[in-house]
Length: 337
Ligand code: NAD
Ligand code: UDP
Image (tube, rainbow, N blue to C red; front, side, top):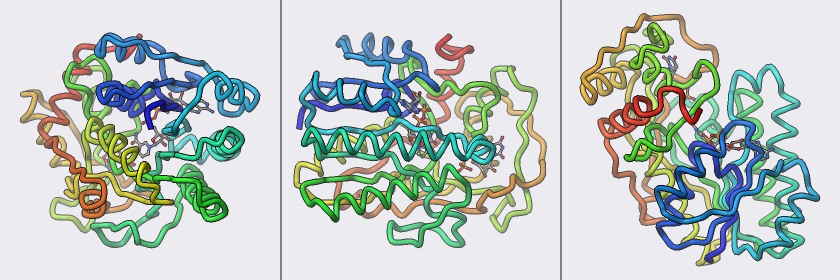
């Protein structure tokens, strides 16, 4: 399996994964509609790898264009990152999210099927565990959705399960990411959110660089040791390497498999602030604010299945995630602009 189409390959996780694919001698074609990313990310990947990557500006909703792409190349498999991911926006614009993420994935699967390309790695999320009341979470935990974004991930998981059940030639890996953060160690690629970030790490880096005044810590009355929410932060390069392992697994024709990609360790918001301050010798001004609606108190992964079956284990520490996120932010204070 050498020729891989990466949908959403100019985005945050996609760009880091393309770099790892190139380092592992895969031939890579990227498609993205550039709605939430810039072509500059791929130019940086090309520079870092010293390799060229074919890029096609295509929307997944444009099925004829997608078919044209599959006529042009002979792919062995697809890594499917493309999708919208902002929880708040999904609550305001559910139809946009259902159409983009679900119809987009249906189009992709139909075109793959028509072209006998039946190896797929899909970007799922820990959001499919809903608002869990215990952690660590194994892949067998019950599933639910607490917002339209989560509902799209859950629905796509079900669609892909039905597809594989109906046609056992399909090999599908559902990767449930926990909280990907950090950046490539070069500081040349990283997370470039539009506007004010929703997620903790980009918010912290923008406070540190002086773009934002202070961090609001959402809730200090959770049933956790310091009262703030606990998550499983994982370096984006570890997530990217997880995709290489998932592709290798597909070669064994495993049918449909599901893996958590996390570190298995929970860190609170205050732990993150402290790790960032220690790693980078900067101060992060913060204040406590009310809980953010819909947030779980604690969410971290049981990663033993991925360790056992993919021979994969996250290797970067919290310090390294904070160091690399800061390196990216200081080298690129305005992102890819
Ligand atoms: P990202 O927004 O940086 O990348 C997604 C890419 O998909 C963007 O470049 C965007 O332009 C593209 N895209 C969106 N809709 C498209 C369409 N209709 N046609 C073509 N391209 C389209 O996001 P990311 O953080 O790299 O996330 C990648 C995937 O992983 C997403 O599916 C996301 O839901 C999932 N995920 C992300 C996280 C996270 O915290 N970053 C956690 C769990 C799961
Ligand atoms: N968080 C926070 N302030 C922010 C953004 C996030 O306190 O400005 C907290 C949030 O309540 C959660 C943790 O940081 O406990 C991680 O939030 P993020 O949005 O990054 O990830 P998710 O909630 O999707 O796991």
